[in-house]
Image (tube, rainbow, N blue to C red; front, side, top):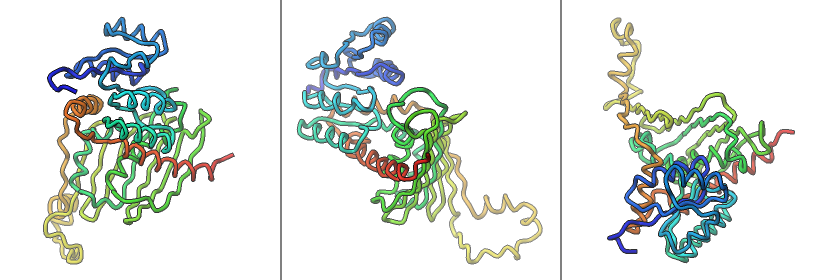
Length: 336
């Protein structure tokens, strides 16, 4: 594809999230050719709000676009993704890449045989709060996450593990860089036929442990994670793009720490003594940013210069494979 012309992009699926893809792509250095959605109401919205050309059948976009953003229900990801990849179109597919690792691998295989860019929309990888994790490198030994959301009546074709926990499974796999050794998990259905809340303890071959909790029937949203290592820990708030790093100060030696030797002044202000002299606390200065905008901008750039995306298809499949292991254990412990 020539680099002296704008990339022609389409959006497939104009639901809640697809509307954001459409709006943000219009502001990027690309040509938004149009959107596809079987819903007459969704097409009317795209036409009336953004003046876009619309298609009732996504197949009508063949030959008109260089790349597409696939924002359809998860069960349709393989069908839609493979169609475009097999027709020479680069694809960004929303998370999860597919409802099963097998379906996800089929999409990856289609990208490989057609030499196409395949990116997966794990948007938390673009959250500015993640910058704090680089402080610990790949030395994470214990990770805990809490991802809660009020019930939204969306994504009910999948359960909370593939809907919400998949974000944290993807992040943990990226941090730990080690095969999964074992999984303990529990979950249950509350409002839908699938699990609406779930908790998992995942142990890795390198000794790291992750404790993940996801709930899509909570009263208030929460997206928090803490990453612990031998040198300290990072506390992340994805929702508010905030972070804090706590590390041992230079010269820290717990064995030589003698509390009985502290003078009265030090004992009277123990908090100041600990956090000024023994531990270093850094509140991360993070711009609010727009992770979805950054994700879409990267995809457009990858299509232009044929570079690898932050989250390639293979990593999307790995996250779904981890989710399947969690779901398998949940199924064994399913409540009556």
